[in-house]
Image (tube, rainbow over all chains, first blue to last red; front, side, top):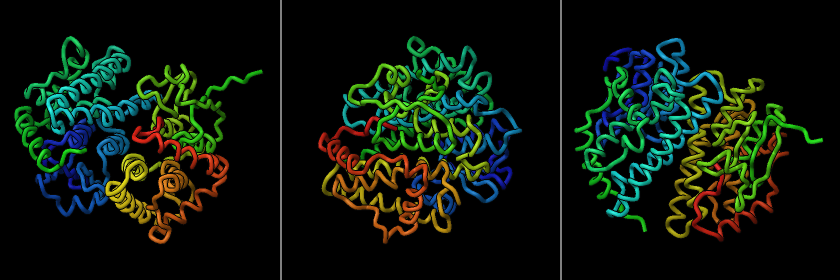
Length: 236
Length: 227
């Protein structure tokens, strides 16, 4: 878990990225030592450009000199390579794996998009409110999914944190930051199971060690929003 | 007597996402029942099996639905272990999954915009698509198929670009995939379309172009109801 660890395993990342967090949580759960190479906001290192020439984005896992890109692909890779170590991330049953994978697509496609709209991309108050509603609706579906998938256990993965827990849980810091900034997203009345799940996820050692500070994220969200508004012209 | 199939596939004839599932099933010699959906009038079965997205393809195995074509492909490979389509080595698997999301998310988005939009936006998308085609072209250097000597997962996923990209170009009057610019990719398309499982399982081109033209007329309705 150390920031400087096994040089054979390097992770390129940045403190605030939920996608980088997925990789870090997975590495921790599999008890893999790695070297965390922190990128600076606004610049891209040579190593990043070399190891991810297609997207030039983080996270990138570099294992024995070979890069692996895209957060969910990295998580599956970590689970497969270090299969004998730590806890297993993907379910063993093929159908359960398909369920986890379906919901991670949903998280990255629907939830993430509405969420970004609600904290960063909205242009008007109405648009913000609509995006907030859509995010809540997506969380509602995930609440129902949790009920079915967890079968009474603490995580989507059962007794231990699994693939879908990581895929969704990486956004919890951001969700809490958004709630500090006034949005109402997770709610004990509407999404009680997810609220309980969030507590357990946050308190897990592998997560606690790397999750960014909520207040820092809340401030950073405001910076991100004004930078986005300046950078990106409104679409017609 | 009606045979009872343990594998059923809900699909739509023009959909590349559906075809890639059929290619996988046929490569592995899996028997299945195909059910054609009218997407303007979806069956109650489809809505029951895929209430969230209401899209095709949906694979139903022993009564259990699996949704999202890339998820279906991995499920098929893990359940019927003969003739694997994904590599065994974890790093190769990661690369295969990488290219799959690249073509399915990034390339498809640019192709969609080039198809539906006009003017400057269309031109921008065509340029972006060409940058993406370059990456795919370079990936194919020294390889017959993305998956090596035989077609595999990556080829099946990139497969929409071997046929439906050309159809989209014709229907919407643009050209991104120039053979001269992307020679390895052009060669791959020829080889891919000649593979028996692929050749025997493509929609009729004329009819597909007509369908895409009609779809474009409707305009601005986002993605086809298929993933």
